[in-house]
Structures are given as structure tokens and as C-alpha cells.
Length: 128
Image 1 (cartoon, rainbow, N blue to C red):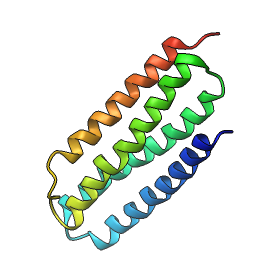
Image 2: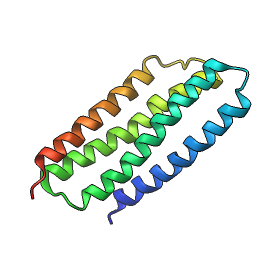
Image 3: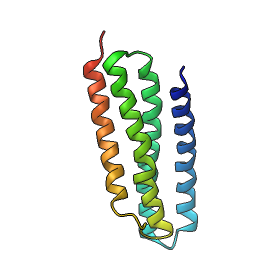
């Protein structure tokens, strides 16, 4: 297993733990704020889904080479970028309000979508 694979697994595991923790925080500390709870719920779902997707990419990476493996790497980096941009923005909205940098959540959403497209490209490029 390469360095990038190990980094992605660590990143995925820490993000999985964070998604669980923020869900508990939302349930207890934000009980009186339904909109903040909803932002946390959405962020947690996307964070957990993409943490698991990173682990999937590591598992698939060992089965691909060439352009397929490159497409997996691109997908992974897009997921890594999307988590703080999309999920982080929603967590901020639920706690401190809007961020001074506009359009971070949509940028993160685009990263997620492009990551899934890159994963599809990897599957189409796979040999075997």
C-alpha cells in the first residue's frame, strides 16, 4: 500500500469519526436549532459517504493501472477537497453562520460530483 493510500485511509477514518461526533453534537447541543441540526445532518451524511468512498478508491486502486488508476486518484483528491468545502461550510453555517468566502459549499458539491464522474471514468478505463 502506497503513501497516498495510507493518507486517504487515515483521512477517511478521521472523517468518519468526525461525522459521528458532529451528529451527536447536533442532536444534543443544537436541539433548540432545527435549521442548524439539518445542516449538520446533511454535512454528516455527505462526510461519511465520501469517507467510505475514499476507502473504496484505495481498494479499487490495487486492481487498476494506467489511466484507470489516474482517474481513481483524481476522484480521491476531489473527494478530499469536497469534504472540507461542502461539509465544513454546512458545519460553519450551523455554528457560526455564513463564511466570509462565498460559494464554498457549491464548490465542494462540484468536487463531489466530479469525483464520482472520475470514478466512472476509472471504471471505463479499467482493463481486465
